[in-house]
Length: 111
Image 1 (cartoon, rainbow, N blue to C red):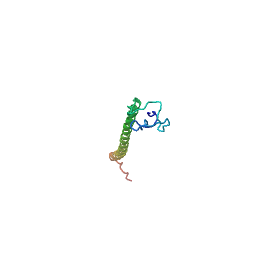
Image 2: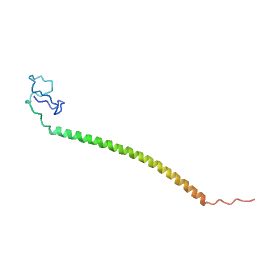
Image 3: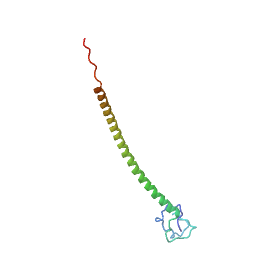
Image 4: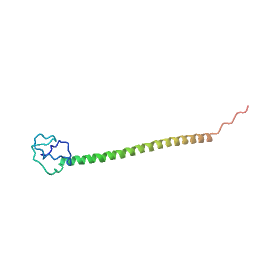
């Protein structure tokens, strides 16, 4: 007799329970269903479940790729921030030197 839906066996893992003569089957079979010699086609729910598992796997892969991209962008951002600070300091130094060069020193008093 066929396995119950909650048996935990996949469609290709179902043991042959039709050989059991007693009603005390230990393989979680449903004795009210007739014996089946061919594996059953996956149900719509099983097909949907496999599809969902596939989609989840693809999404997990995508998340890993996106995480890698975010990490690399974070590194690039830190490099650019350091460069920007360096350029700003250089510009400030150049501007101060320009100001000092254009301001003439007052003449010294002679006593």
